[in-house]
Image 1 (cartoon, rainbow, N blue to C red):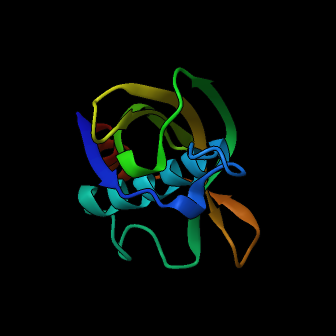
Image 2 (cartoon, rainbow, N blue to C red; image 1 turned 30 degrees about the vertical axis):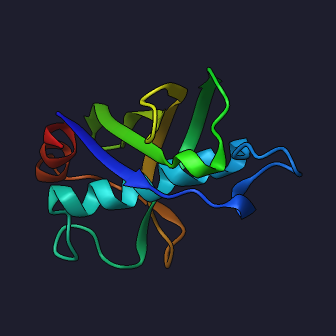
Length: 133
């Protein structure tokens, strides 16, 4: 399933004085969308301790059109793969005002235990929750 969330964008999100949202901000919005997605899925402290974080192993991005800061961003999240070693997600970034596609990101994630500095094996239950969305 696809999860969808929306964010306001601000003038301070712009690249220089262009009025267009910086690509780095779009990337950050996908990370914030993942945090909302995780909550939506019901992944809580019983399934993922507070010292465990999703960290990107790799990211690809394709940009289609600029996003004016006044438009806001709508982000659709879809998990395409989940295994005990990590998961992959597609993020479609749209203009919240116009519905126009702005960019697509694909993130390959692992869960990192920040206390031990090691990846965390993901249970079958977590994998199902991520895939179900």
